[in-house]
Length: 425
Image 1 (cartoon, rainbow, N blue to C red):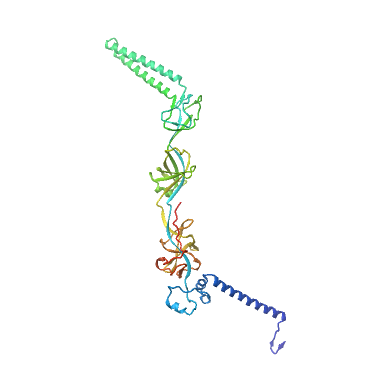
Image 2 (image 1 turned 135 degrees about the vertical axis):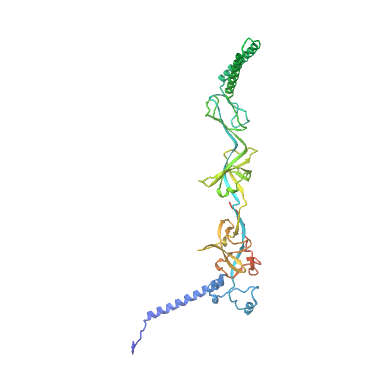
C-alpha cells in the first residue's frame, strides 16, 4: 500500500515470526551470560581482583570484606552492610627464599690398579725345568718362580772355578820363586793378571747360572702363570704378573673447571661398583700437569688403602670429592615465571608485588637455584601469580595481616612454605 509520497512496506507474516524468534534468542543468550557471570563471580575467589585489574570494579558482585588492619574510613563506609569499594590486593600464597649450593660435590668413575704391578719375563732363553709356586698365591720378594734347564751353565761354573784354582796356585809358586830370585817379577805379574781374568770368568759363569732361576721382584699376589713346565721361553715370553694390592690406585678424570680444586692429599671417598654399600676412604696421590685438549678433562690418581685385600686391580669405582661450592638464592619451582623478557619471580615488598628477573642456575626436585638480587627470607609468590602485577597490592592467604616491610609476612598461613636448599652434582 502506497500513501502520498511515502511508501509503506508490509512484512509478510513468516518474516515477522522469524524476527520475533531472533529477539527471543538474543534475550535468552543475554540471560545465560548474566547467569554465567554471577556464577563465576561467586565461585572463583579471584574474580574481584581480575575485574579490578581490568577496570571493571563497578560490576563486581562479591567483593571481599575489608581486613581488620584496613583504615577506619573504609570500615565506616561499609558499616551498613554495603560492599567494600576499591582494590583489595591480589590474594597469593608465598614461600620464603632460601640459599642453595652447587658444584659442592664431584662424582667420577675410575678404574683401579695395584699400587705396584710387574710382569715377569726371563732374561735368557731356555726350557722350563720346574715351577715351584702355585698360581694365584702370594709370593714374597726373592721367591723362586721358575727354574730353567741349567746343566750347561753349571758345567761352565765348574770349569771357571777350576781355572781360578789353577791360576791361584801358579801365582803362589811364582811369588815364592821371585822371593828366591828363581823367577822374574814380570812372570809373577802375568800370573796375577791371569788369576784376575779367571775370577771374572767365574763371576760371569755364576751370573749365567743365576739367570736360569726367575725370582719374584716384589711381594704381592701372583697371577695365573702363562707357561708350564717343559715350555721353551725367551726374553719376550710373559711368565706371570704380580700385583701388590696393599693399596689400590684409582685413576679418574675431572672437568677442567675443577682443576684448581685438585691437590695432592685432598680426601676422597670411593664406592666399588661390584660392592654396593661399602665406602672406602683415601686421598689424591697425583695430579696430571695439563688438561687434555680433546676431552677438556684432567687426569687424577687417588690412593685407597686395602688392608683386607678385598679390592682388585681393574675394578671400577665411583669417586666422590667435596668442595666449598657456589651459593645461590633458592626459590620454589612454582615461583619462576616466564615472559618474552625471560624468567622472573614476584617478591612481596612492603605489601606490594615487585618483579625480580632471575637466571636459572640449577633445577632440583624441590627448589630452583637462581642468579638474582634475592636474599634468604624474602617472600616469593608461588600461587596466585595470575593476579599479580608490578606495584600491585598483595594479600597473603592465611596471614592475619597484610605483608609489611622487608618482604616478611607478619603471620604466615600453613600454605606459606620454605623451600629446601639445593646441592650440585
